[in-house]
Length: 200
Image 1 (cartoon, rainbow, N blue to C red):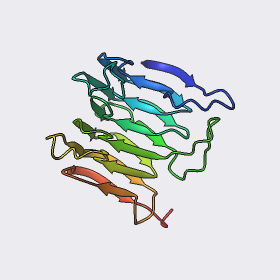
Image 2 (cartoon, rainbow, N blue to C red):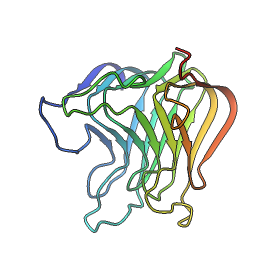
Image 3 (tube, rainbow, N blue to C red):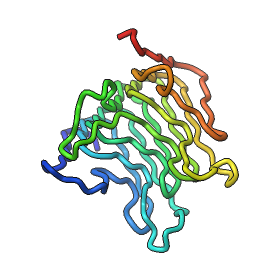
């Protein structure tokens, strides 16, 4: 995506849990999104590899999002990186600011009745990475690094948050604004992690 606006809207009263934007399709597949400019507005969930293989197993496929510019607004849905298969998201590195905005004050409720405001890595025991580089702003209420229901550590899966520049701004409270579980990692080499609860 090199410009323009993409609005993904949930109809009023819609209650199905199918995400609004899913990178890598259902029943297997590999998906890639490359964004240099423009705006994507998402009412529902933004899933980076949350496919549902026909046999119910985890998928060997990989979904990738590379956002070097533009803005993604998640308005009430969850941003999930790595669900049923590996997911990787890199934001920043371009000449203009790249922004991911995830309902940071949880003030927006979408038409499905959801006011989610979280970024979640490794919802299941699969690898995931979220890399924030220079010229990037990520603003959310909370971030969970390795949130698998099963033990991802036992399976050798790992979630990694890399802050290599830019800014990660978290509005959530002290008890769950930033959560790291199992063998999840946060690596900071540059940039700023600002936990802004009660400050803004």
